[in-house]
Amino acid sequence: MPFKLKVVFMAVALACAAGARADEVIKIGHVAATSGPIAHLGKDNENGARMAVDELNAKGVLIGGKRYRVVLQAEDDAGDPKQGAAVAQKLVDAKVQGVVGHENSGTTIPASRIYHAAGIPQISPSASNPKYTRQGYNTAFRNIANDEQLGAALARYAVQAGKAKRIAVVDDRTAYGQGVADEFAKGVKRAGAGASIVAQQYTSDKASDFSAILTAIKASKPDLIFFGGMDAVGGPMLRQMKQLGMAVQFMGGDGLCSDSLARLAGDAMRDGQVICAEAGGVEPAQQKGMDDFRAAYRRKFGIGVETYAPYAYDALLTMVQAMQQAGSPEPARYLPVLAKIRHQGVTGNIAFDARGDVQDGVLTIYTFRGGKRQQVAVVK
Image 1 (cartoon, rainbow, N blue to C red):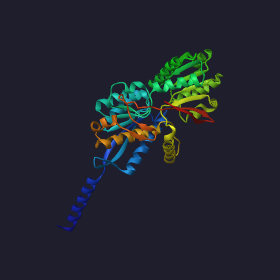
Image 2 (cartoon, rainbow, N blue to C red):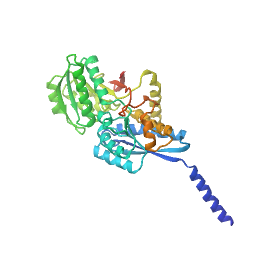
Image 3 (cartoon, one colour):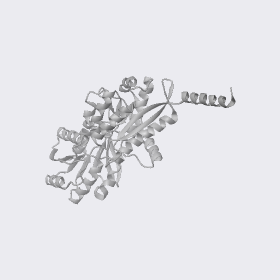
Image 4 (tube, rainbow, N blue to C red):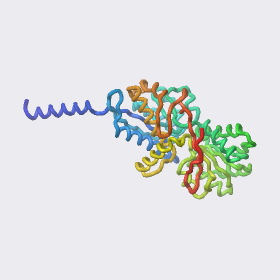
């Protein structure tokens, strides 16, 4: 064989051998609002998922005796249900083997139908509306507590610890905001102790002027306002409350409970005025794991965790663990394993009930002092 031909033959053979040894790919989608007013929260979720992918690839992923490389296909749904559905179809067409997301309930619920039709498992690390896991879709999971738990816990805290009697409720008419506000109102009625809802108003997740609804609320003389919505609206609402001389308690769910709220509210937020809850949290025995995650996140991204990055991180690792236990990344093979998974995560022990909700969901109640979020209690 001529020397040049031999060199070419050897090069082709080496290339084929290298190709045979190349890692196979697991493609996992991630969807959040990484543009628009809550982009800081969406990017936080995405960063958590990226941390999990980078750690998995650094260690190497073995499934069924084969080595895999995990690839994250991150998409932006801008918090819009129609865009969320379009992105879901895009991920189905891209043949992803699983999805972490979506970020909020309004996009997660319509997208879940598309993933279910394609048989693709989905774990949302932040969508809390109960409807998401009550549609009968065996592909839908979440690793945080739902709004029933969140609203009830906040209502108990408002009435029992906060001694609130006259409560006003505002929601932004989104699936998340309306859902958590409705559950809070139910919780107030169950709590009794002389507490009542004295005003109920509505806004939108795009609003910036709340003078009319706040003036109407002020006339009802509440001692607490509950807001079902996100920090991008809650911050400006606090500013306008101050302008109207409304020095009352302000309470909300996880959408309000970000480290960015103080920045969005400016000097309008008094120490201890805001009480909010995150639909997750760790008990004392697991605190070190969460602290280590937060430190690693800051080293990697140069910023602190906003809210649900640890849950996105755990969701992706839980999904890959199910693939490893099933011996395959194919959705039909690992989906039954995912439904019965037991994953030790930085956010606690993750297991799902028959609906796909996390078992024994924990909630963390916070307030703000000196512009910093401070933990008040961990409850169930």
